[in-house]
Image (cartoon, rainbow, N blue to C red; front, side, top):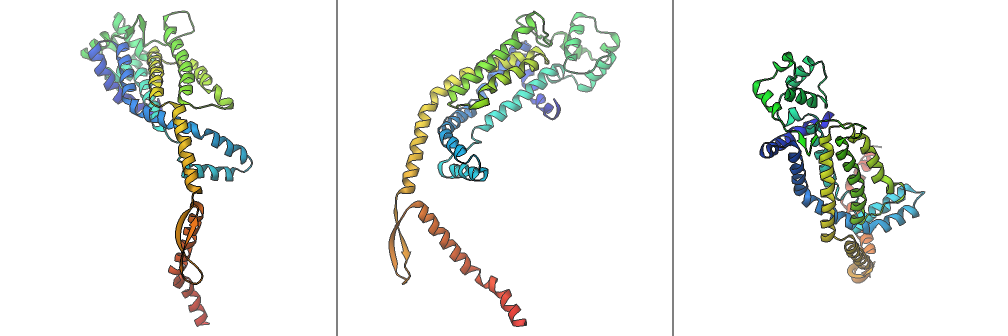
Length: 343
């Protein structure tokens, strides 16, 4: 899996511990998925809160984008002002997404190479065994080696490259779950290997749509089709990796659906939207409200003056500029004075 392949090593240790305890590769994946979802729940809770809050800003964002459609600089300025004045944060809730991304690639790596990451047989040894068998050490090699060892058909020159302990571990490696060999690659043929890839695609599409509705986000234009496009992409992906990944993804999608139901009860988007709108209105009123400040009139006397928040900000800026000018006036004039003196 390229530069993210290292993620398979720590997850492989967790899967091995679960496999040793449960004695089943399939159940180890199921329990592992449940554990990941439980550990990520606090982050998902925070994401739900942020996402629900962000839905309240969507009408304001749409208005800015429409009003300044031809002036991108002004549009960006207004969006920045929205962030500064009303707390809009487009990056809120990204951490759980990135966490899921990294876990996903770690699971793919562990599923690609279960003998390396779960049974902890060295990659160099497995590469040599693959060479002796006339094969490449790829994601499908593990299935072939397991089948030959468990059926007793592994060639002697390949078997001698493995220790007795390694051969015993492969011989006893339980990769069958509900009658399905999880190390096999599914094919477009009517057999049991199709069950989990199909379930993973269906559960991902339905979960994406339902989760988006529960989060309060409203997709516009082509974005409405994104969950379905992603599902179609996964059809290809699900048929190019061992079935074990489809099992993990199916269970993960079902847990995500259940998690979304719970999160919606805790942070309901409609209630959060109303709360944020009230906060925005309160800030708007505060900006318009006038406050009394002391200013100095041209005669040098202090007087009370009523100003709005925006007027106060302007006065502070003017005062800062005056102080800056007073502080650095000598540095600005000295070089000019010296030049005049030399002339």
